Image 1 (cartoon, rainbow, N blue to C red):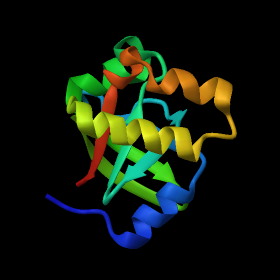
Image 2 (image 1 turned 120 degrees about the vertical axis):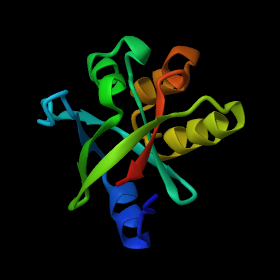
Image 3 (image 1 turned 180 degrees about the vertical axis):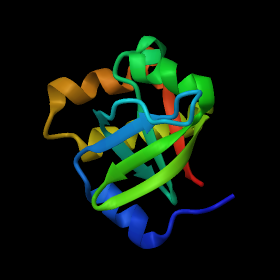
Length: 124
């Protein structure tokens, strides 16, 4: 399994937004969606603001592969579901810290429904 470089982690973490697209069955990319991304340690995480019912989240569940763009980094990734409660607490803190200047938008990102749609981005 590949790992993020420190430079990639720093650039993506510094980016306000990330573009994400999942792979279709025919290996083409779906339309890019703009979402938030946070870093915890040497890993990157995203959440669906609409929980597991979000359109991009449902499409990602078909292949668990796609591509991201953020901070000048473009990378093919594998999407890994995150269900660990302690890790989700750390991800909550990362969202609340990074996006604190958007209090009305960040508050929903740490609700149980949205936490249930947490994805680790693993480079491939």
